[in-house]
Length: 310
Image: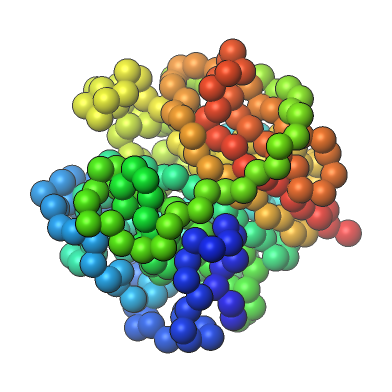
């Protein structure tokens, strides 16, 4: 299997044809409670190490798509009632593995303060409620970024041994020194005119509601005091909620068979607040942006392509 191909050039080709099987395998038998994850993340604030070689381990867990959770997630993110399992939903199943990788003793940077820079997902086949999935995640390498040290985490979902979904998340440690890795290449986007598609109200409760559904309880999204502690005047919306909401607005109210969405997160969207979804011409690969209410500041920018289910 080839390395995840989007964005091209960010990660050197793996010397082994299947890096997922060449690395040691570990199983996450239970997902820790949000409070336990938060305490362990706070403990990483003492980390000061330089970037070394990424831990080559592949973490895995078994997960069954829970219809009730998927429905609550779909409703919060704006997916239509007939869309089925949202193509962004498997990210929630992989998120505990991301945290487990970042909390491993060999990871040199504090987890708190990492910036989620980009996320690319690819759905290969339609997902169904009650699907039994094997979720796997691994470090895909360091990336040299002009603002610090970036790193990529690859995630994939297999159903009965077949690849059904995969993603790459790029995280950034601002201000890191002794930078390693290939030069980071940003998500490529076409230069096309954009039209306003939807105006959104972002309520103060959005961060707490998304944390409840997703399990991502980073306090900068849920607490005004914590947000101020990290330099934000107010809590900020989860980037993955913003991505899901933008995708939901552009999909038909019907299941999709395949989908690719490559998104770069640009600036925070504050809560409470508002946003404006803009998109390029329909058809093929479509440019999307989520901007502030004045349509001047981008919160995210990327591309979306999909094929509806037959």
